[in-house]
Length: 77
Image (cartoon, rainbow, N blue to C red; front, side, top):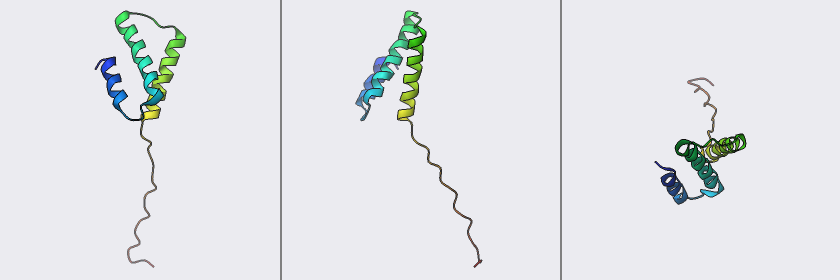
């Protein structure tokens, strides 16, 4: 998928919010590096990495751990 296609699908999703624009910045910067052979400065690299991490963290599911149930008491009082 292209950056355009990814962004069009994400914008259709409810609650896409501010993180979508940050992800778009990451993808467009990646396109410039890949296709335009540009080398972004260290600050841009760090911002893109942080935006990507923030996007993943804000869209990932929370894992909830439950304690296992106690063993059954067969015939014990």
